[in-house]
Image 1 (cartoon, rainbow, N blue to C red):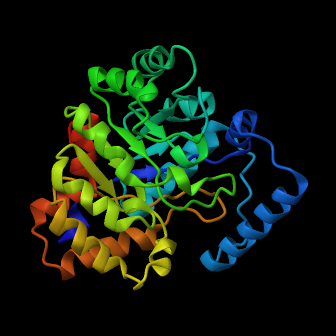
Image 2: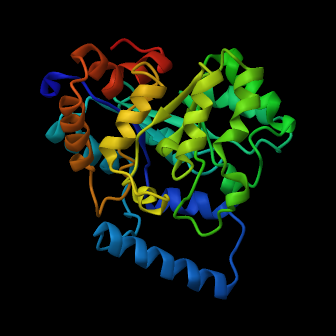
Length: 306
């Protein structure tokens, strides 16, 4: 059934030498000791995931676009959302402009920068971005901090979705004190017309992510990532169990398929798409709802025909 369903991957990243330089330009530097610990953590991750190298490819935006589009064609993906990891993401802007009908980009802003809401508006109205990505554990802010409300208000007025990475993350600079998805509840309450997306099903804060569905009809959840976090729960979960619970609590209109594909060395995570298809079939999810999960829901948030 799922073979003929169009796929819009809701969560990908463009990682090249250029984007790495943009990211390093705004991240705080690490001491030698911390940098060494970060390298060790990354090596463990690569061993867990079976990735030989996570080095960012030194390639042009043209070649990166051609590479990803070829992978999409091979594995039956129509389009994808690529999420920025640094403010004013110029490389990602140029990348998405190669095929604006298939490559959609979310920008990234620092909520504490003066005029952050104006920067967001410029990115959306004049630079081709279709949404906003925020990373509280790296940016070191609680999502409910009202100093960020002007950014949320502008996003709501612009009619764009805002995606948050809560929970655990590979980046060693992260701070779990800012990683609880429940921080989003006041935002969802105060901006009821603003679509809010919790990435990676909360990346370990799964129970908290499910709680958000109770009151907040404007909170969505994406299924992206390898699911490493599932091992660290009191009872390890399978991807099937996660998807089944998300569909039960959020319903088929608020669940978004994503792969979190990133590195050229790894390529498109086609096995995750295959696994999603198999689970949706095994759960006997109606074809109409499969179409929503695999692409229709994100297309609706982006306001594009699907």
